[in-house]
Length: 436
View 1 (tube, rainbow, N blue to C red):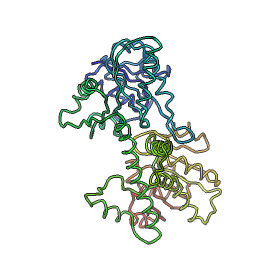
View 2 (view 1 turned 60 degrees about the horizontal axis):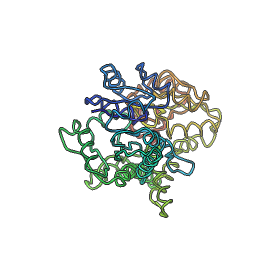
View 3 (view 1 turned 180 degrees about the horizontal axis):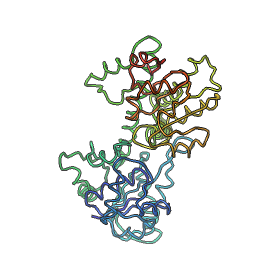
View 4 (view 1 turned 120 degrees about the vertical axis):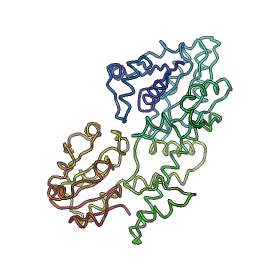
């Protein structure tokens, strides 16, 4: 089976590589010539555990190809996935210009039946626009070529994306015809051997499922952060509250961890886009508006704790940050709480020393040289007046607290992910703050 995937970003590259690993002949397409040339040389543009090994293997074995020319492979494939970016516009709605450009290119060059599948996260109704754009270009050519559209949203967790794709909780596919359904079933059959987890829906429902899923997870995070803030006021412990409600089978324990806010490429963008979709249809998503408001406020919680500790006198203080990426096992800095926190610290006159195992090059690209990037976690703590844990990388879990304390000017620790034990830190001479 031959397929094409347009867009070699996070979703496109992971999807294409995993399909190739299952024996599919995959051509990944991108307009960025430099990125394609690097991929052809085995240089991977993103960090994702396990991905580089699979890319190199499948490219070497001839199942994974990279090109800038969709038209060269379009009429040799059965499926074309559109996995291009859908960045938020200023009003929060998803920018569909790249998605529709792919559709127009297909319509201008299609000569045989193909299933056109939207893999990007897009608002409800996008597939209908894709179908219209392809049909318009075919009509301009006077071409009578059959095609189908489908929606196949991704549910990959950064840091576990390869495993998520290879053994998915479920695969959601929205289709309009039995022909498209059978083709998509054949493509995903190797992934479904142990348990049949394909969910077929109409196309609009598939588009909505993606936004609804991410918005629900974001809601749980903001809910617990709101509870954590109230816990601090009334003297409760949010970790005990989390355990108490997480054991309720109707609630469950996932995504109930309080912290310094969510970030990344999905939750912030998708929550905004769903709010905007509702507004365009005359409806207010009041719960999601509150979710977004709570999350933006939560990104300043560590700064507020620091300011209270030093009674507002932050100018000239040196603050160490452990972790920069929005979550562990990725170099993704999009909407990362660390970026907001660093800007607040710099604006307050602080010096910032930071260490992240993977994300420092991306952080420097985004934040510039105002931050001192260190070779390890202990160097970051050197002469620091306070240390903030922002991203819960595994290597931060059991540091040598004696070394950290000797390195710091004053042993103040602000735990933005609630991974440390208050009694242990207090016994080691630290002033310890956590969330909730």
